Length: 150
Picture 1: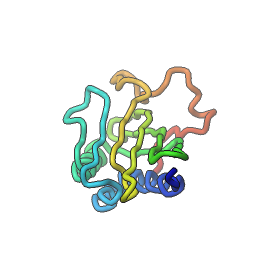
Picture 2: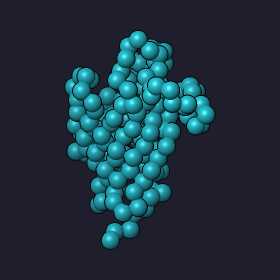
Picture 3: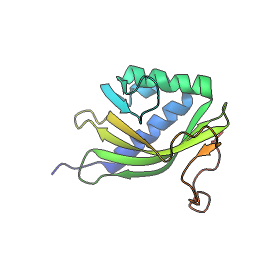
């Protein structure tokens, strides 16, 4: 059985989120295999995002046009496979909205980089509410971010 460096994978996910928040192209690219794929639920244009270059450019566009910021709420890294799952919040500052969800990560065993991300939203993107999240779930009591980090 392969030894899984859970701390390394958790650090890579944090580095990826830092790169997203910084809109740092080179840092984003360094987190992915060149042929990485980021899958999303239906309803978004131009998905899935294929290649590290596309993923980096799309997140930078979100920062520039939506005022996007992301927070990680939870990270769980597998002990016996090169995979992880996280819970996140995507803050869209210019729109005054937020979306919560999960992502499943698959890492490349050779390079240790992200090869695939599958995004799942906690709720459909409802344009009538400011923060898309689970109904009646006590985010504050459970220690979730209630606003974007500055």
